[in-house]
Image (cartoon, rainbow, N blue to C red; front, side, top):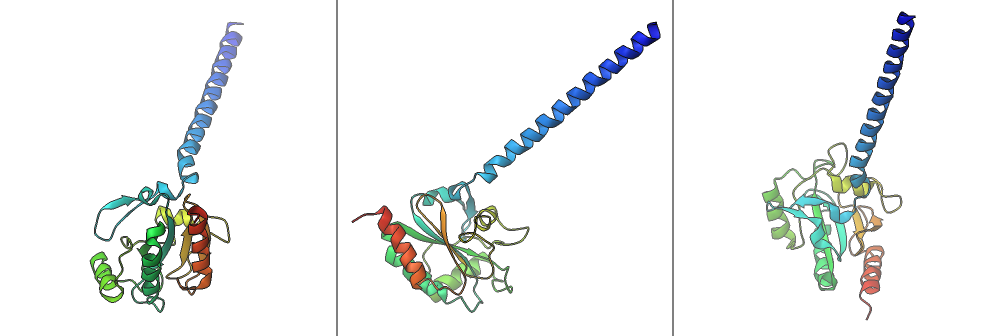
Length: 205
């Protein structure tokens, strides 16, 4: 009789321990889910990137602007697009528009230089004055968080980066609203008309 009571008590204790373990595991899983939530819910302004000249900058400083995000390279057939990007920036920057350039060596190893070399090349050859950031990965497992977020947007505004000078157009609310492939130049009507619509819609008159 005593042995039966002891055995019953032992089984009961084991069941309580098992229930506690399940509760702890479930809570841990919930905690992991909650920790991942900010990344899932991130918007454009939640990210940061290092400028070519060194300091890390929060992209929140561009809040309220229309933004064209471009992955660039210095030795690509598309490299002359720097000229049209600069012209677009100069034409519309007073309306609240900017270009953000992200040099990358991911495609054809066409951006082998250092940040200093990239900066000198852009300024000397194309007079680039729009913000340029440190060389980064824009695809693969080493892609920076901003590009992970950009490429994870639903098609057709999102999707993977396929080559140098792919463009993402971001509205004043931080939403990606257009994606333009590498061969679509900055002065293409598809780009300029989409840009002007965003600028006019938020700056009536």
